[in-house]
Image (tube, rainbow, N blue to C red):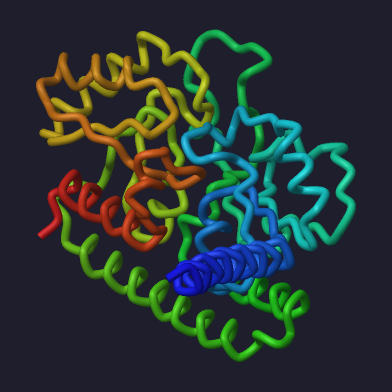
Length: 311
């Protein structure tokens, strides 16, 4: 009986040691994965889809944080330093990159994009100007143009192959699937936004200019291009008049920007209000729900199509 108990005890100890060994090996494999740091959700979505589970993808700007106002934490700075590759959006979206000392390969993705220049009407439409006003001549939300996303997908795929050449076939296969998804998105936007009764959407901050340009609709905004700017009373009155005159069914605000003014317009004009997701970043709830670029762009399409009263 004692020998039997001894055997059982030794088996339990052996199983425990085996479990510890496997856990250590899994941890070792995880640590050994090359790290890639990305700054915005669109770049994260591309990189994650292309790499699968072969790389550790670090999101520099945490989910739920406004990318316009983000400043790196000590942890994110450490992740950037450890990463073999850093991809940031550029075009003025991340002021913290100015003067930042990157240790390894870093790419400003905006340098490879077809960028949209702002016209004079898209600058701040408010009476008071301060240091928070955005007077850039370039719209940094280029990921809302699917052709730009395709260019970024090809570029990122090439960079990941350099990091992990043994996974080249996987990355190329995943790239092709991602490009097909973007092509379908483009076709569905073209189809859904054709033959609409209205040609203008109302937003609090114009972050969807690339979509408007590509699919032929207009954008009227409370505060022009600056997300922080306070709208003028004159501009609010103008938009209320536009909403009433054209029977606009819905006005929009965006995540991470105050909805107070746009809700005032909706209440005054007696129309509904909804949120558009320009995908500079996503909320913590959206991340928890594992929403992708593809899924959220279809949600945006449904809302824009409804607001423009498309057939």
